[in-house]
Figure 1: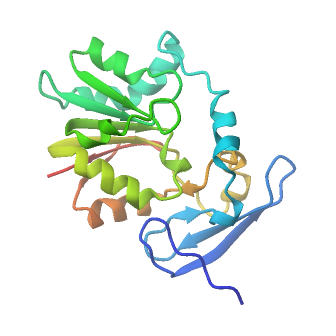
Figure 2: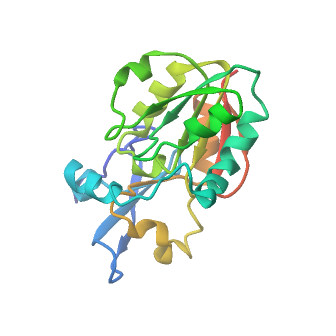
Length: 219
């Protein structure tokens, strides 16, 4: 029997095979579930390479002039903005090819730096400190979420807000038909229990806003 893969969030080996996606539109990928943090993840053997990943992202239509896209992002930005002091400084981690949160932040009276592995790869942005950090539709793409969380929390000032948007895992009955797993760049999936584990492990205050939006506050 092969060794179970290590969880990319809590690094335990207490993981088990959970599901294989055999739908016509899906890649034949295995999904594992961690018994400690409840993360569901796709092992590295099934990850696509960076060029194939970027080719998919290049098709994303992120546009700061798109009213619908702004409305979508405002479900995260609005509750964060309401909690900020005037002049607060932020980071949009994984801003994509059409950075929009930075524009919305400026309109609300805040500054915001863009960072993206492919489109805004200046790592000096990750050496600064911020009052708020947003990451929208990014965490499901992370092969090493623990490393990313460590980095973001080092950038976040005490009392600062980390806002995440990623659809949370449905119950086991509905997981096999979940549309979110059809995207080959989606490799890590977070349940409510996973979010609570993150908050407890990193000593953060958790506020779940909706089924895909949550806030974490650094004490």
